[in-house]
Image (cartoon, rainbow, N blue to C red):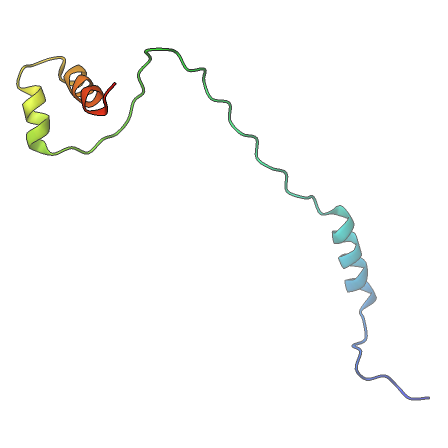
Length: 80
């Protein structure tokens, strides 16, 4: 009888551990999608925006309310 030398002898311990891992391994679950807050009409959102120093100085030169003035200018430019 000829010995089949193409197959590696299997280690029973490794085979048992592989079978155990296959059965007990948890499948990754999809991460839950975070619920977004309801949109409130007229509510504002905090963002970070990079603008040129000259543009910032232009809107700040009239004092407080410069963020509202930038918002109004952006709305006008967007046609809103």
